[in-house]
Amino acid sequence: MHRPLLVAVALLALSVGSVQAQTLVATSNIIVRALDRTFDFTSDTTTSVRDSKIVLAARDDAASFVASQGVIRGAQLEAALSTIRSRVPEAQQASDQVLAEAILAR
Image (cartoon, rainbow, N blue to C red):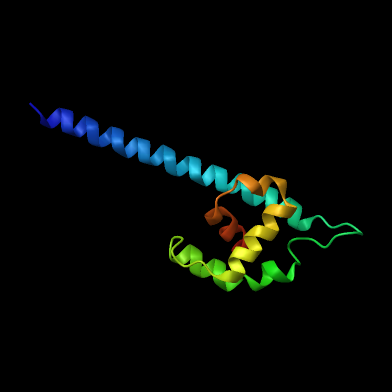
């Protein structure tokens, strides 16, 4: 008698988890695309974020951060996150995880 209810609850929990994962992926993709457009944009007066020495130096820290699911936070990554957020308006609301993945994607 309780088995159908348990199955229904389990299916509901799985579908909610799937929706949350899809939302996270969609949000990550939006931020990465916005960062990519900004990384590719250069002007005469500023250097692109993509070519920033601070961001380039943070790749190892970003890899550690992503691999440790946010536990390992290096100083170079912190500097890069601050730099990106100050130069890219779309990145101000992005999570550290999304930005670290964007650093690695470059």
